[in-house]
Length: 254
Image 1 (cartoon, rainbow, N blue to C red):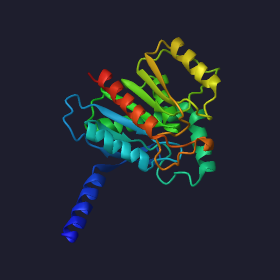
Image 2: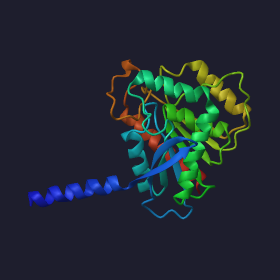
Image 3: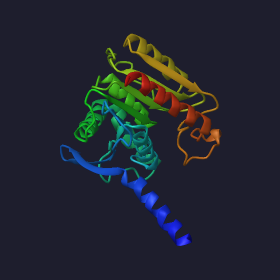
C-alpha cells in the first residue's frame, strides 16, 4: 500500500509538471525559451494569458501561475524576456537586466509581443489575450497597454508604475488592473499619483486595488512575511489579488 501511494504521488506530480510544455523561439539571434500550459477546462473563446516573470527571470512562481491559469480554463504562456541562459545570478544582475528593459521599453514590448505570437501559435485566439505580470513583469504588463499591443487587458501584480515624464502619453485601449501593496516601499507615492494621472490622460479603463499591510512582492510564497524587508509574502493580499484578477477576466472575456 505504501509503495502504491508513493507511485501515485509521483504520477500526480509528474502530471502537474507535464502541463507545461517548453517552447523555443527567438528574437533575431537571441534564443528564447517560454513555457506553455494548455487550458484544462472548456475554453470556447480560446482565451489566453501571457505571464511576465519578476526580475530574476522565469521562476517557479511564474510557472505555477501558468498551471493555475490552465486549471481555470485559459491557455497560458510564461514569456522569456531575458533570453536563454541569461537569467541573473543575483539581485545586482537582476537590477541591470530589468533596468535595461525598463529604459528600453520598446525592446520590452517587442519581447512581450513575441510571447503573444507564440501563445497564438499554441491555439489562443489573437483577439482574446490578457497580459499579467509580477514585479518587473507587472511593469511589463503596463508596457503592453502603453504600447497598445493587441490585448484585451493587462494585470500588474506589485509592479513598477513609473514612466519617463518626457515620454508621450498615448491613448490606451486595453483595460488595466493594478494590484498594489499599500505599503510598498519601492513604488513612491509620486509614482502612484503620476500613474493615475497618466491613465486619465490616456482615457484608459483602469482600476487600482490597494492591499493593506502588503509590501512589494506580496504574491511570492518563497519570501517570508517580514514587511520590514520591503518585499514579503502576504497570504491575504495574494488570495484577494488572484480573485480580483479572475473577476477582471470574467468581465473582459464575457
